[in-house]
Length: 288
Image 1 (cartoon, rainbow, N blue to C red):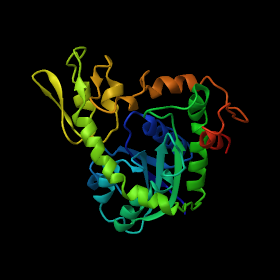
Image 2 (cartoon, rainbow, N blue to C red):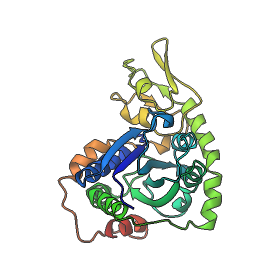
Image 3 (tube, helix red, strand yellow):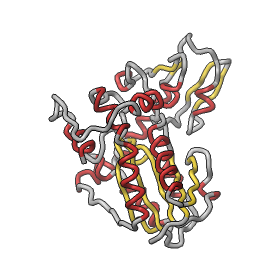
Image 4 (spheres, one colour):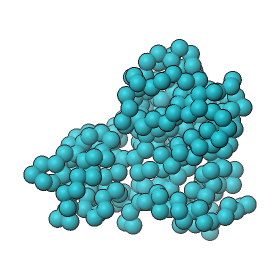
């Protein structure tokens, strides 16, 4: 099928998915497609203009797409059998238990009258607990334009791509909603240190509107979904977790800075690692 118009509806917490969406928007536009890119956290699904293809892009939280993304999809008006695609973004990639991460979103799209014709996974530097070796971390961004080019070519050539998740992963994904509850507890326990300068950036940027200023200090509610945007975007590093402190990267997370470094790195013909068994999934992704 020829797609003359494409809507890219994306949610991005700390910027990885947004970067991928920007690359995809650029490539599709250069190939003559009219693209509208919408931020799921800011635009009502009822205000999305009809297009030939609705393309959902979202990070993976708790072995499924972000809660915000799934709720947004569930509120879409009837798709009238138009095509849809789902691109997930993860630091772990298409490995167990992530093989079923797009299943709920695809079900919701089908219920809303869309025909899901394509799905894929992109890997980005992880913002949660640990990252791969620094050279491989940058390599994930170095190969990103090439991965996006494959996706854009697949879509414009009408290639259908639907994966078959592992059975056990379907059960894990179903119980992923329990981890969403853990995210709410994590968010409630966030606090601002004395380094906070009351700039209000965290309040402005929170996609769930979970933060408000109270007596000049950020106050955190129960709607957190673990995107970590407030933690990593704080210029003074003044927002800290009260529980599960080990999930925060010690050196922070700045996808724009990492991408600038990655742009200086040439793409290799073959990627390797001394710890191949540990990062086997990453190496396979980079070399595919």
